[in-house]
Image 1 (cartoon, helix red, strand yellow):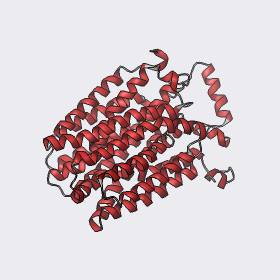
Image 2 (cartoon, helix red, strand yellow):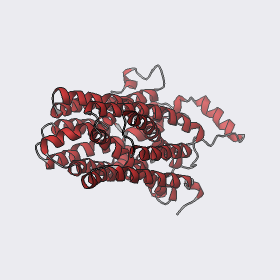
Image 3 (cartoon, helix red, strand yellow):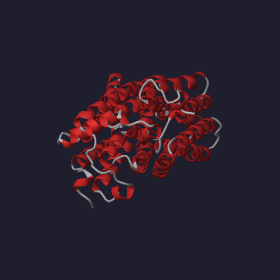
Image 4 (tube, rainbow, N blue to C red):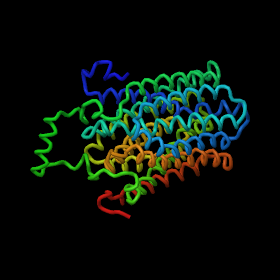
Length: 427
């Protein structure tokens, strides 16, 4: 039973905002715990004696599986609706984190990341985020920014909480608590979610029939705004794959994923390598989370006015410069500065990818199209997290990995600068 049925169809505000709220709560725990992986890193290495590349490989494999399955789960969510896949994410992630508390060998870590965490996140990736643009058009950037701000809030709250649980008990106990929290939050989202407003007799943005008549009249007079639907006719996956713009977006998503996952997993180990305590390094992640949340809220709204493409270029370019800054950062203030500005930049680009995808290709097949974009992001993320660990094992430093990530982001800015709308060119 959804909130809508609970209130017998009479909801005090547009039901789309209830879906935004549910996704916000889900992101607090799903994304917040994902961004807390680095806090678990050294305690597990200390107990088992694994290298950083060995443990990073588990995160990388999960990212590849998550991305590889995202087009499939997106296509299924397009067809059957998102609720059952969100429930699948809830149960898979709950089981995965609880099972991680019982591991005794590296192969068990890999198996759990593959079968539970990778599978669970792919189910959510293809259903939670692509649903939001179906409910909003004019407020697409704002609504997506609010949803993904939940991940920023989770990055503020969860790393210090995980660090506290590890220091007060151990990392095994922290995994159990994590599993219970993410499972409950995601089941809430599954209960609230519905596929599209039309299924409940509603219209996007809470519009009424008279609003549509007014819009139609305005368009007939030549005053239609192109900002909301710049791509024209909605495309299916087969049509989208024939456009150069989708392949460029793939590449940009991969560069963003490389940088994002590299920092998510390796910032805490890098900070402790520089002499900071685990608790202080977790605070760096919280600062990054605060800035992340502000970036999502700010750039989501800004993109409604300046365009998703330009906003993405600003975010990726800023993050590239901050990665170079991190290669020379030594003092505490320098790490705080990195966390604040980089967090704002990478937080800012997170809501832009699904909304930009919707702007370019429409919402008819958004689940599967955004799923394929997410697959590219996951390939980049897997490469970033593994290469970060490998580079450290070989050079005892993250400098080369940070410089490479900055170069990839600069490449992403160049690709965005040359990206054209699908209706303007086809390959």
